Amino acid sequence: MTDEPVGGVRVCRVFLVDDHAVFRSGVRAELAGQAGIEVVGEAGSVAEAVAGIGRVRPDVVLLDVHMPDGGGVAVLRAVLGADPSGASDASGTTGASGASDGSDARVSTFLALSVSDAAEDVIAVIRGGARGYVTKTISGGELADAVRRVADGDAVFSPRLAGFVLDAFARAAPGPEERGEPVHDPEVDSLTPREKEVLRLLARGYTYKEIAEKLFISVKTVETHASNVLRKTQQSNRHALTRWAQSRHLD
Image: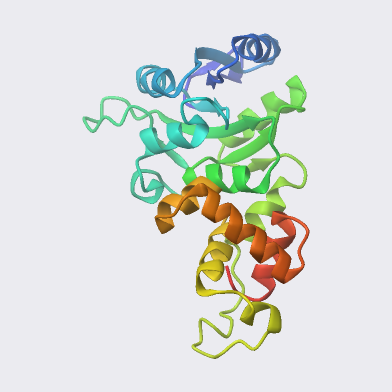
């Protein structure tokens, strides 16, 4: 948090991004009563968010995940760049304006605030550069605490969401495939090469649309491959499939 203390409390400047104006008003009202929190701007679209973040240079951006024009990932890509590692430091922060003249050292940290608790959404925004992810069931006091914590460099997640990130990014020792050794597993062997490609991308948290773009196939084809993979591996849902793939080092 970069502002000077006011009355002994250091102020954290927050920018809200959500396409629902009523929800933004509610969050603003909740945070207004919290010590050390100041809402300095808001936006209801990706374009407004990118412009506002660059202009205001807040300490923390509360970022919705799903919006009609691209959502949180689109904001992260626009502000951080296509490769977050090239634009942000290890704490998940970046110069919000993208300016290189050194006129303002203020950096912004991104905290996702979403109704979704889907693993693919959590992984996508964390991969994009967000420092944490909390759901909209959070209370006003808990949200203020989460804002302060990410501003101070902590990673913050709603209960159980951190497990998705650990599953996706924590890598165990190289498996047989990485060592160039054959994997003899009837379920794995039953998958076609394309199904294995789709499986790996699913396990890494990519959405169907992102997989389609990456493999140059239609979303409908991705859905068909995913359905076949679930059937052949006898998994009931995507989360179970991700764990199944990780246990076989197929992610």
